Image (cartoon, rainbow, N blue to C red; front, top):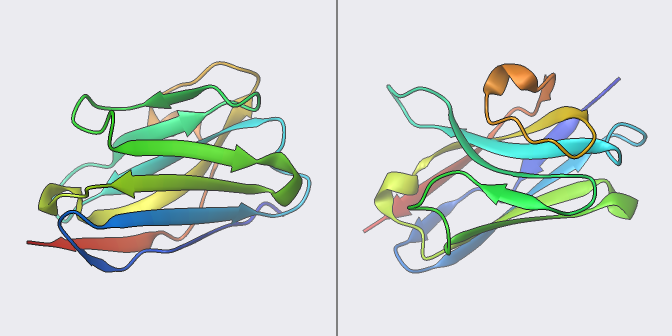
Length: 125
């Protein structure tokens, strides 16, 4: 069974750095695109970033580029999302999701078949 477990979410101040982790069950990760989405109260789920099995990454919004980065370690079945200089508008539940095989990134949530339970990030000003 595929399991994705996120961790690292917490209350931070504007300007702090934060790294979220997602650990996948063995055998379900290394050939897949992995992504992070987020959802704030009252808002739709939003694509944040994805990384291919080969390590190519795509950050979702212009506001996030330069502040967010995604990385993975296939041997550890883990993907990370680094948030530098988070802002109050970055407050949300962050979800890890498993995408399809190959090197093509889809930013639509329906392209991802398994999801973690989410980890809460709150950015205080």
